[in-house]
Every structure is written in C-alpha cells, then in structure tokens.
Image (cartoon, rainbow, N blue to C red; front, side, top):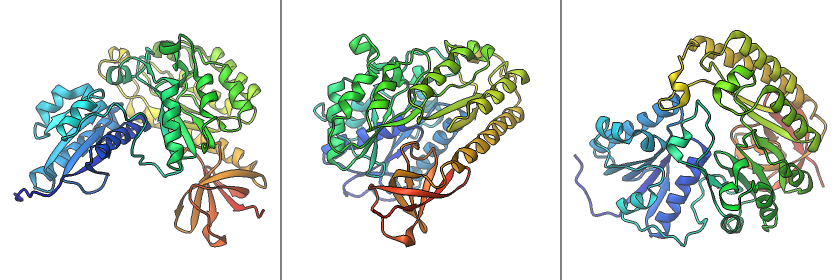
Length: 435
C-alpha cells in the first residue's frame, strides 16, 4: 500500500451518461474551483468523483464497471478516495452501498452540497451559472429545467431526477452571458422535457419567451433545442425559430414509437395521427428544419405488425436525423409489470432494420446538399481534416462536415461558409468558399 503524502488533493471528475450529467459535472467542478480546489475532468487525480448514469441496462453496467475500476485503483493505492454521485447512485444507493462498500460515500442527484462538504468545499449559492465547461470552447449545454412530470411507462428518469423544476429566465440569461464571455458561441438547450418549461414558474409553457431573451445575449450565435416532448408542444416556439436567425432550424423530439397500441401502453398521451400532424405543422412552419428523433423497438407486446407500422412510417417521414434503441426492462417503471416478451435477437434485428432505412434516407438527403453552400462552425481538427457542423447538426450525434486541412488554416470555434463537394450516409465533405 502506498504511503499517504501531504500533497494537495487533485479531484478527478469522471462523467458518464447524457448531456445533463455533463452539465452537472461542470457545475460541481465550478464549485470546487471557486473553493480553490484543484479539479480535472477525466484525468489523473488522487480523489475521484464518478458521476453515474442509471437510465438503461448498458448505461448502468458501464457505471458499475467504472466504480469497480476506481475501487480497485483505491485498493492498489493509486487513488486515495472514491465518491459516487448521479443517477445510478440516486436510484440504487442502498444496493450499491451493500455490493461495493469500498466507495467512500454515495450521493444522489440532489445532494451537491453534501458531496462538496465531503470534498472539503462549501456550496456557494452566489455562483449563478458559473461552471467549468468540459465541451469544446465554442459550445456549451444550458440546462433549463430539472426532472420530469411525464408518466412514460418505460422511463425511470422521474425516479432519479424528481418532478419538473424550471430555472428562472433571468438566471438562464445570466448563465448564457457568462458562457458567452468565456467564448461560447452555441447554446444547446437541454432538459428532460423542454416543452414543459415554465409551467411551474409562469403557469404557461414559456420556452418561446426564454428563446427571445437568450437571442439578445451578445456573442451567442446559435441556440439549439434538445429533448422536446411531442404532447402539448408550444407552437409559438416555431415562430421564434422562423424569425430569429440565432435559433437553429433544428429540433430533437424523441417520439419513441408510432403504432397506436404501443403509444398507449407507453403512456405517451398521443397517437400516430396526432404525431404525424404535429410533424407536418413543423415542416409547414419551418420548411428548413432538421428534425431529430429517437425510437425504441422491442417494447413489451410489440408485434411484427407494430414494428412494420413503425418502419413504414420512418420511410414516409424521412427524418433528417434518427437514433434507434432496444427496449430496456427497468425496475420501478410502469412497464416493468409487463412481460419483456420480445427476444433480444429480435430487438436487435428490428433496431438494425430501422437504422438501415435511416442510413439510406440520410444518404439521399445528403446527396441533395452537394454543390450547396452552408455556414459551419469548426469543432476540432482530426487527422487531416477540420471537423465542422451546420446548424442542422448537434455535436456527437449528427452529421459532420469534413474539410481538408491542407487547404488552409481554420480556427476552431469560428464560423465559415463552405460548399459541399461530396456526401456519404452521415458525413459531408466541403471546401471553404473564398470571400
């Protein structure tokens, strides 16, 4: 066992899961930095904080494996302390304490002050929106609400994150100004449900007003919407998107399924007809909009007929962006009482079929872009290419624009006008238009 030294602690924050966890880790790191603590993100440190995900089986497995990895490092004397926070810890704390007792302490999603205290820091209430961003400097996530009031049968988020709670507009504008002052040019708005924003604070769906305030922030050039729920969508948001150049013509609206029996069992509060009509209204209001959705296949009771209904609908709707996941049977959800009766190999086959359809659609839509000009932001340099995105693409999940680095220097985080020269399923190739 290594002899403990008197050296100053370096706290390593390890983030697993979704963008909401990224945001929470950044807030934690901002608090630690304000307490004059040395903090790093996924680098070497003798004190480790693991921000876990507990959403579906694969994410839970990754979180548990990461905890076990760092507990082993603790036993080997490589690290001194291991703390666990986030959704897995919120959902399974008693089980984790019993199964992995060598973790120094477990914290839930709402126990930031307690975690800070364990790390020898104080929670500073005055740090409105001040955090240590871990994304590339040109974009950052802006979490506008926490929790969820939706009753979806398959989802454990309300168990882990609690009821919906909106952040006041003034606080979000302050946070956006702070981010802009640090060089952030793109805000990616996130929540479990953007469309519910404001109901608790303002007694109305207030996403449109929030957008109107955020576009006034100097230095912010793009504002992107993630995770909009289809039921009760505030249509005034489309008007803001159409009229405000800063609001990207892009929306991430997870639809999950389209067959009416499955939608009913999922407790989604909508139908195939209503969902199709909503998307048609999107296209009519903002013809240039890129719509991203996510789907679940293999939900309990999903018949071959239900799946074919979904597959045919995907072919008809021609989404610009789409992801597909296999159903995960989660404890304490409404659907857990149902029999998980679709075999794993059938689930995987159905997911692959959907993605094959989407790959062809994406290829066809991308071919139409060849010869056209787009404004792109450069996220990074990778190998012999600069990698950028159009307003129709979100980081990590959507198409990328590749520009030959030998043609000239492009500053990361800057915007350029490019012409598309070639296209694949999910990548575009381009050259900078000489001004």
